[in-house]
Image 1 (tube, helix red, strand yellow):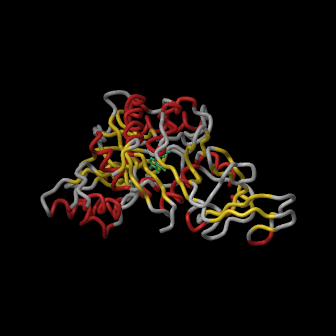
Image 2 (tube, helix red, strand yellow):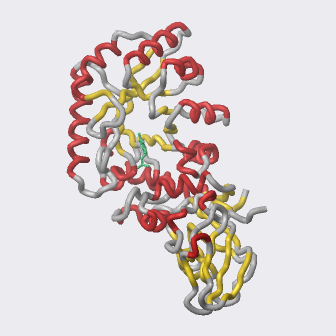
Length: 375
Ligand SMILES: Cc1ncc(COP(=O)(O)O)c(C=O)c1O
């Protein structure tokens, strides 16, 4: 069997959830964002862990993910952040999901089906406070709300928006968005609507204390142990949940002048010892790490040499004593005193830690532990 393994530490996840609760305050409810297969960590085990830790709601992107969670036995409220289409309304009512709502046609269908079945479906209105991605424009909010108020079978349970730059400490646009969001909520109050769930804070906002007084928060990346970007000292108490390991499958010592991997982009200048692992871009280890990445072996950092192939990568282990076939190689995570973070990988390849987690997590066999205990 290919020795590659992504390990997910559910104990660390639980720790991070309680850290979020500590930051948000005891009365603030938490929507745990588990979309995109829980950022590559596995939506079902992550959701079960959060549910047993007391999460108030799970945030998925689309209906299909919600259906998977219900099938797995999750009973907490499930919030569909993308919203739904008219042909998904029936399933939403049947499985008691809470969809984001920003289109009147969908609201009308939801109202019709809910009323027909004697149900009341909770919805959260999505308002666009500056991201220009999804949501009701602020200038349209009043008329949207008036139309919703005329509909039976739906409960205006919540209102929410999303930050564009909350990951950048001190960015003024976040303040502007908070201000617009508060004005939107006030406008609703003037029209006689008060919501049980008002939320805008993602992980960056949690760390930067933006919009935490609204009663609900919606973090993702912090659950998985890291801030959304560099520069957040407040994130130091969070623990990484994912690690990625492989094992050496061949070692050989070669003379100077020997090319390594496709394209011969690396040629030994002197006698070097090269080890090979069965990890490549098909396993979520980006080809942009060719001659660029570093991995850990025997507790030491060594460079990736030559191109990362589809399923194989070579590294220079010259000077690391006694490397042999079967030795553990850490591509993401800690070994001895060294650690490779998703941020480091992201910086090397010009992306963000979110993408690193999603890609590595979804491309490999995952093993779940609870802070050391396997199951
Ligand atoms: C609507 C919405 N809310 C919350 C989150 C969580 O954001 P973060 O992972 O930065 O906490 C996301 C993630 O992209 C999102 O799209």
